[in-house]
Length: 145
Image 1 (cartoon, rainbow, N blue to C red):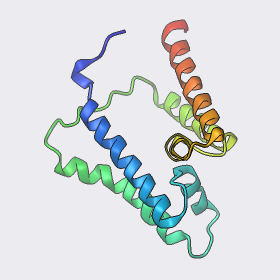
Image 2 (cartoon, rainbow, N blue to C red; image 1 turned 30 degrees about the vertical axis):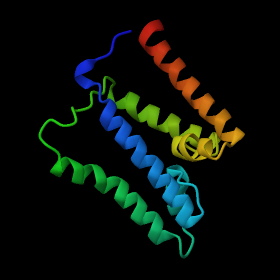
Image 3 (cartoon, rainbow, N blue to C red; image 1 turned 135 degrees about the horizontal axis):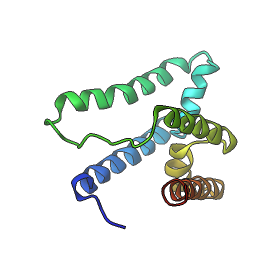
């Protein structure tokens, strides 16, 4: 295994992880709720009076943040992502992730960030399951098929 040094971004990845952890901690501290994006978006599909505004604001922030960053960041930073898959495969993967979040009662942000920080055994099992499935999928697609 080799590292693609041209696209290796440890400092921006660390900064992103710190910001995500800070956002999750602030969200649970200020709202008493776990920052699970799937649950937040799912709540928009079954709206409850008094919860629509903050959910829309959070989703709007998630959409707006990379757009603002793209406007303010220097040209070529960070390097453009490379997706080495067809559009059909990306759509299929998205549908499988959506199915998995329903099956696992949460997503990577809910289980992997918030659940693990709360030392939840259920979140540990869910995180091990989706990380293991991801590793196995990449291995099969890159080395077997």
